[in-house]
Structures are given as structure tokens and as C-alpha cells.
Image 1: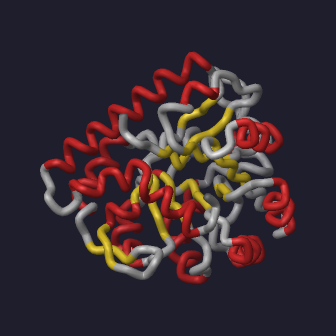
Image 2 (image 1 turned 90 degrees about the vertical axis):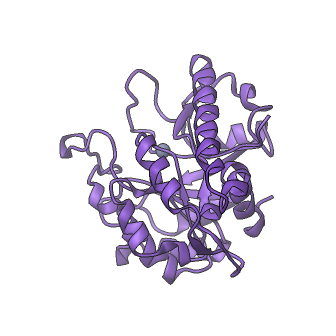
Length: 281
Ligand SMILES: [Zn+2]
């Protein structure tokens, strides 16, 4: 069986059947979301207590990431670290991620060396009518270029741009974020074919890794599912999708001698490196 880490997963409230993944993934990063969010067909995202409880129940498997509430100050970071969160998640702020008013939050993250995963690109249902005080659907606030600014300003923080920034993947490529040691990219999201195509065209390019050494872009890619965990009937489907995605990656990599041996890194090793370098394992 492949070794896999899902560096982008969410948890439903009142979760069940989570042991299903115990022999299938070596790590699952549970990224918090505002509990006000409605998920069509399902319940709501789990709150912070539920995420922490799952991480405690399955130590070394589920890892808790707190959703940053940009309406609050940097103290939320202190509290979260004390409670046991090991990383953070950004999504749907009312200002751009790199807005000056948010810098104190990142300063606090830098103090703890906590990684942060950012949704980049579109969000489903992009309408102001669906916005709430804690969730703004304006995709322009979640452009990958904002992470370029932040990653340069805060070299102590590991930044992850989720979904390859689609539809702004070229922003990531043109800014040559592959040369920023502390910036990674997760391959989750609904635009699977676009993402696979970008990976295929760019995985072999030179990149600077977090320890300052030179590697290739493939060493910066993370497997992610962006799926909800916690309902038994969803789990098999989620796992099958993940295996199909991994197979497709392997198939495309097989054609390229430069990155064909880096697949295990994309599936698990790169995420593991982030955890180790931030002393979270
Ligand atoms: Zn997500």
C-alpha cells in the first residue's frame, strides 16, 4: 500500500467512523473552518473542541489546524497553541491575506513556528449574498501573490498555498515561488485536470527547499483531498478518489525521468518534512 498524507482535509461535526483511515493514511491534517459555514447535503464543519478531541483520540494520525478568525487579534494563536493546535488555516478573509492589519497574527505564528495552510483561488458559491462576518467569498482576497509577500516577510513560517491557486496558478509560477524555501503547494481542489497538467509541466523545475538546498518543484507539492471526514458513507469514496489521483500522478511521472522518483515525496514525504522541520513530530 502507498504511504499517503492528506495535507488538506476537513471534519464534520459529530464525526464517526474515523478509524477507517487508520491503516490508509500516515497523517491527516484536519483544517478548521468557521462553524457558520453550511455544507450542502451534510451537517456543519466541526468546531475547535471536536477537532482537538479527534486529534487526541488518534494521536499521530489526525493533526489539528485552527481556522484563523481574522476579526480577532494574535492572542487567538497563543490560546490555540496552548490547547494543542499545531498549525493554522486561512480562508475567506474580508481583506487580502497580506493586508497590513493582519501582520500581528503572522508575527505570532512566527514565534511558534506553526505552519499555515491558505485557501488560494476561487471558493464555491462566490456571491456577496452568501457572505457572513466571518466568511467573505471575494476570491481576490485569496490570491497566491499575497502569500508571496508573506513568505518573503516571514521566513520562519511554512506557508502552504492550497489548490495551486487555480485560476491564478500562473501567479504562483511567474513569481517563481518555487525559489521561496518556505512556500509549499497543495494539490487538492475541484480543478483536478488543470492541477495535474500544471504539475506535469512544472514538477521538474529547480526549487529551493526549506533547508536551503536545491531540489525540484515536485519536492514542494503536497497531496490533499479537501474532503470532509466524519461520515461513514463518504469515507470509501474519498479514499478511492485519493488512490485514483495518486495513480494518475504516478502514471504521468513515469514519463519524466527528472521527477519520477519524487512521487513518494508528493504523496507523503514533503508533508512529513514540514512536520519535522517545525518540530511537530
Ligand atoms: Zn478546504
